[in-house]
Each structure stands twice: as C-alpha cells, then as structure tokens.
Length: 175
Image 1 (cartoon, helix red, strand yellow):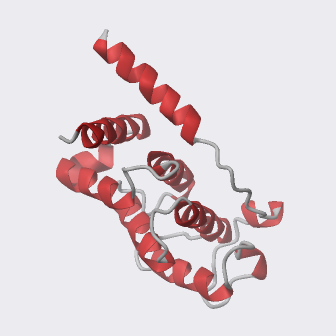
Image 2 (cartoon, rainbow, N blue to C red):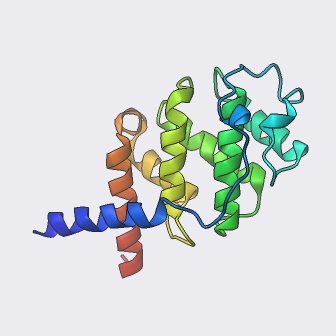
C-alpha cells in the first residue's frame, strides 16, 4: 500500500508540475528546425527565443557544443526554453551555469549523441524543479553521480523521475 501511495503521489506531482504559468513565444519554424548548427555564432535568429539575447543563445550553444554531437537549431531552442523556465521558477539566474548543468545531466545519462532524447530529459529536469522546488539540476547530477557511470546511463526517465520524487520527500522530511 505504501508503494501505491508513493506512485499516486508521483503521478500527482508530475501532473501538477508539468504545466507552467509562463508562455514562451517560439515559432513553429524554430521548434521544428532540424538543421544542424553550422556554428554557435552563426545561428539563425529564429533559434533565439523572445526572452533570450543572441549572446545568451550563443553561450548556451557553446556549452552544448563542448559535449554534444549532432546539435540542431531546434535543440538550442529547447535548451533556451528549459533554462528560461528554470530561471523564472527561481532555480538560478546564471543562464550559462544552468546550461552547463543541463549538458552534464545529458552527458551522465549517455545521451550526448542522441538529440531526440534530450527533450524528455529536459522536461524531467524542469518537472523535478517545478514551482520553486527542491530538486534541481545540481541535485539530479548528484543522484546520477551516486548511481555510477554505467548505471546512470541505464536509468529510465520513469526511474529518474521516481528517484527525484523520493529525494524531494526525504529533503522535506529533513533526512
């Protein structure tokens, strides 16, 4: 019965934190632009979301390019959206630092060359933080590091979501 309650709590948490009160204006062109980037200083203007500067976009792209393979314009836009939501929800206000942390999470999960899996991971990170939450990118990095390199790469999205929920509950209890 205890596991059932935990799973019900997890589903409720996911539902409640999956929506944001903030709308990000992103063109369909930017969201679907699968063009590989030619260089972080040569991104099309559509890659920059309304709330970011061209300089912010280039910095995010440079952080991604340090580790990732096959970066597309739409991937940069996805990172910008996630970073914006984390900033607005008071995770941190250092855009470049958040980009580094998101890149590290994807690297630890072994997804550096799998851009189609990045959206699920970034959604998971944002949902874990939620509105002023307790489990942000730094804590997820710590969870993945604690799992070890081989296990971190094999953790499913569902298992990582459950781990963040358990960690959040333990933190709230003071454990």
